[in-house]
Structures are given as C-alpha cells and as structure tokens.
Image 1 (cartoon, rainbow, N blue to C red):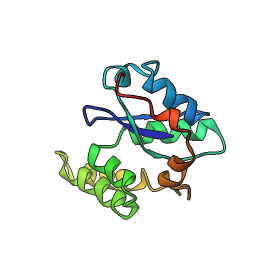
Image 2 (spheres, one colour; image 1 turned 90 degrees about the vertical axis):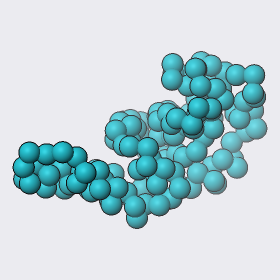
Image 3 (cartoon, one colour; image 1 turned 90 degrees about the horizontal axis):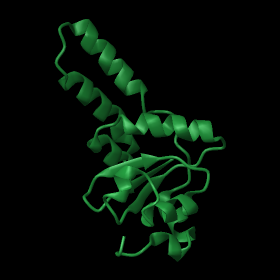
Image 4 (tube, rainbow, N blue to C red; image 1 turned 180 degrees about the horizontal axis):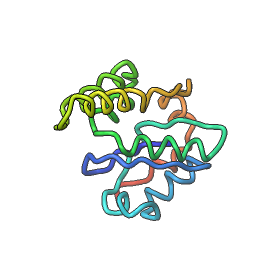
Length: 137
C-alpha cells in the first residue's frame, strides 16, 4: 500500500505487488486518472504486506481517511491516528449521543491495526533513480 503526493498537493492511495514499477507507471502518466492529471507525483509513504489482499484492504481503509489523518500516518505520528478518528467522529453532527458514541468507537478502531516496521525513508533509498521520473510528466 502506498501514498503519493501529487503536484497539486492532493494524495493518491494505491496498492501494488511491485512498487518500483507502479511508481514508474504513475510518473509516465500510465497510472490512475487522478495521478495522470496531477504529475509529477512523489512517494511519501508505503507499507509492505505478505498478501496483496491485505494491502488492498489497507488501501481502502486509508482512502476513507481525511487529509489530516493521512498526514499523521505519512509523518509517522501513529499516536495521533486514534485521536484524529475520535475528533472527527465527535465533530460530526448526530441526532443522538448513542450515534456519536458508535462513531467514535468505530473511528478509533479503524486505523489502529498493527503497522509494518519498514520505514518509507529506508525503502526510498533502495528504489532505483529512474522511478522518480522527470518534470516533463
């Protein structure tokens, strides 16, 4: 599962079996429609999984997050993830305190699965230079 920062400062979340190849595809304009229109892109975060279905599940989970929560993940502020979920749930308009309570508990449960130990910085150093692409888009 990976997160790209696009030229217009939006984030794109995806999953792949081959990160280096997928990054090259995005930079070449062969990626998702979102990234094709917002080149160049920069890899800002990723997680590795043993199975692609696990990565796909995590991708879908992170895609539902607000920008602030994604940025906490990107910046390694894992301690903030639960608070950001609770803050969002508590700030939503609800007709009952029971609904608010359910939102808060659901939000705090989402996103606290055990995170892989590999850091983005370590893998970025291992990626070939050609993956970074150029400014021609």
